[in-house]
Amino acid sequence: MSAVSARLTGLAAARRTGLYVLLTVWIVTILGPYVVMFLTSLTPSSQLASAGASLWPSEISTAAYSELLGSTPFLTYLRNSLVVAAVAVPLALVCASGAAIALSRFEFVGRQVFMVAVLVAQLLPAVLLVISLQGQLRVFNLLDNVLGLALVHAAFATPFATWLLKGFLDSIPRELEESGRIDGASSWQVVRMIIVPLLAPGMVAAGTYIFILSWNEFLYALTFMQSTSTRTLPIGLHLFIGEYQIRWDLLTAGGVLAVLPVVAGFLVVQKRLVAGLAAGAVKG
Image 1 (tube, rainbow, N blue to C red):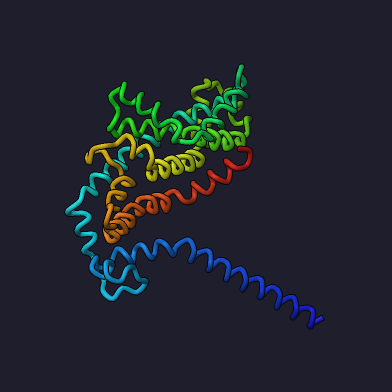
Image 2 (tube, rainbow, N blue to C red):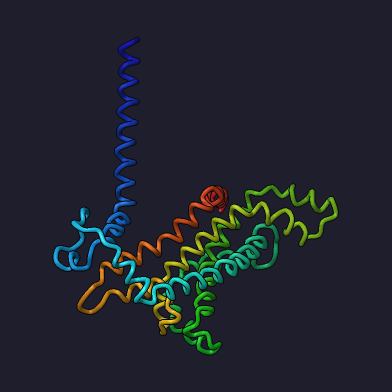
């Protein structure tokens, strides 16, 4: 019996060791590029030009950050990205939550067709709509305007956010709404006082998705934003890649600073984000 117990204990230890090894490999794979990016941003440009990036720079320098913040329009790009995301997130959330409530709680003619249309809209390649969107933005004088880009981002984020919020709503018991109506609450009061508070974790998850989509979006920002005063971070960082030279120091320093708002936001909403994604996946 002791031999069997020892064998089982050895197997359990082997499984734990294998799990730790896989976890370590996964962490290195995920965090490795960020570590290299950070170390490269601290490497002097002269060393990068002569020897390339290294995991162990012979000299540490913050000159890239000083040049990035002092001699380039990086802060303008950062401000534009924040403005675009700040407009796109609430706008898309309002549209997606309204559509999700309608799809989850109401029966109406064409409901199934609308649900399929929302899904199909998410599958369309972004490049297919560049020309038509450019024409529409020009008509409304929103070309080369951060508001126009925010509207485009909100439109493309709404279908997925709708499905995510609908899945979350489907997991909320209808009895809670019925009890509110029994107490005399109107449909609007039920939505405002019962559904919206319960929908908060799902809204955080959807809002995080919309923010990341807007923060990283490249194609439409490159096509619609032509002036320095309206470019966003992805386009600004792309400009450090020249025809004959790549400013790896500025590119990686900008990448480090661009990641910080996303990481900070994730740490703030981490618990609600996980809860929202888990609930949205139950019936979504």
